Image 1 (cartoon, rainbow, N blue to C red):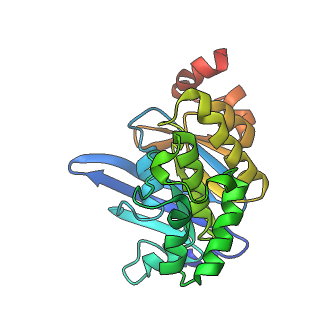
Image 2 (image 1 turned 90 degrees about the horizontal axis):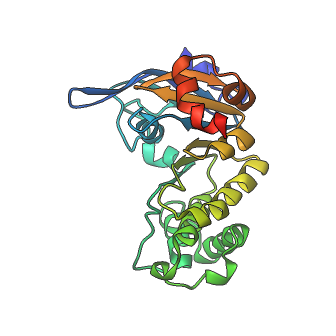
Image 3 (image 1 turned 90 degrees about the vertical axis):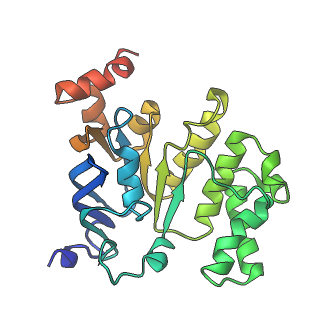
Length: 253
């Protein structure tokens, strides 16, 4: 059985034959992707290529039409899977932060651990303080979320996801809504996570980040994974004309 290959020694998460449509528009076409424990996989490609839809299918924010998503040996697409329990182990960071504006920074970080993981408030607050310190926001713990800059909000969103102690972090273009001068502060946090061994799948337009941090780069085009390789191979010797065309501006720089 396929699930038997998703063990402690196999991929942490594996996508098989994934298809997803919106109405008559086929967005994902038989996607196969494996992500190993501790690996950083970046997904690049033009807008509309299916990158964000693939990411959202990986924790069932979008429901696949068909295919399988094996995570810790269980198929997330199976009817009997407790998706909420498994989703506790998959952190998600969105491009638009999605903080609760009526809460301060600490409450944003402790809500899910207390309500979903049944942590005590003391334990949840200790975990929140640790993660907020890790993203450089220890001094903002009681600040209203509405008072933060975009970069600070995104770092809180990362800390909030980490408070659930996930095995996998998904990032959906986490810097695309930020002013250029504050993109670096979020990317630095993500670099630190990668260095600490966090398993990450990152949809991004930040090619320098993809080149320097990734273990594997996936290029998507028109709903398929057109090319998949190491960063060195992808950015110095892309195989397909479409990949070379997409990367031309970055490669020229």
